[in-house]
Length: 389
Image 1: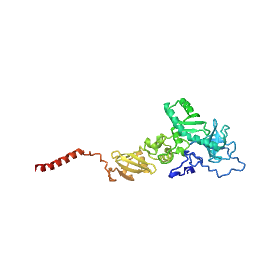
Image 2: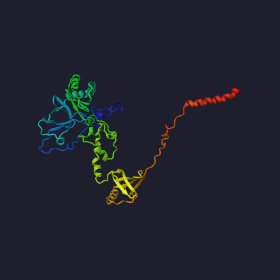
Image 3: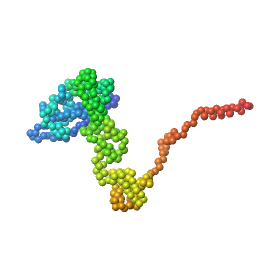
Image 4: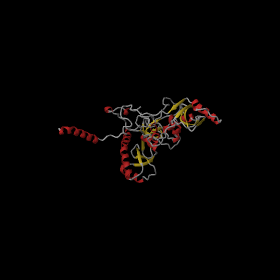
């Protein structure tokens, strides 16, 4: 559900808040956590948990101690402690659920060095913060130009300003180690702010930038996925997907995270399932496995001498034949066990649309010059009798 800024603007065009999922009302639901304890009151004498979760640009979240005991709710803009100066972010979680999140992310809530939350952001803080956010695209473009002039093999993907505008963090990706000391000097001179360079991976880059996946939905890493688990090509093999890198790779260039979503279901189904390299020995000949359907529990087999004719067998039938083969017994043929026999049908291409055929380029076109010469000969032949007369 979008916020009020995402409503329709002039001439039916979407208005948009241009905050890339970090709007002030938290309506874009980017990496949000549902507070299912919000309508429950604390027991008598129990103090509320003094830590809050604050989100900054895109997916960066940090925990702060509410030492001033401010009454905060989700969506409040607050000023927080930074290494130098202060930062501005939005409260995304309060109460006892923050304790659960800190335990999940292995953060010690008893740590005395936990950064503090200063105050609720004033209008002046918000104006400075918004002004800095508006400069980010321009500065990112200028920083890329400086990196190209210095011939650095790196890609600056995102820029994040600190809330008070005194510092900017540049996120970049690179294949190898990059010496960006001169780059920092040039950018600090051009922008007049402190510069911090932070290298991120290609998946983190896609998480920060966001986008639409091949499924038609927003990227999982930029909406709800908080951790990146390793994905291997074996996940695609278990699910019998074609090993096409263009289809298996996401916008980050790595294997899609969603390949792991259904992997456990496939592994459970494959525990008592015959392998892809199963061979059946019959009196008619040896048969090879051509295709497997895990959830329908069926396998397709064909004889070595007749690869075009496939026979569909159930999983239990294949196990029964394998048990007999272990006892050095051969079944008569697969046709006795087959649920269905499939024969390869010759494909005939038809002009179903009523347009050109598939062989329209096979026959060469006749030259127009020959036609013109024939027309000239015919006209000359007709004119000759008239001249003789």
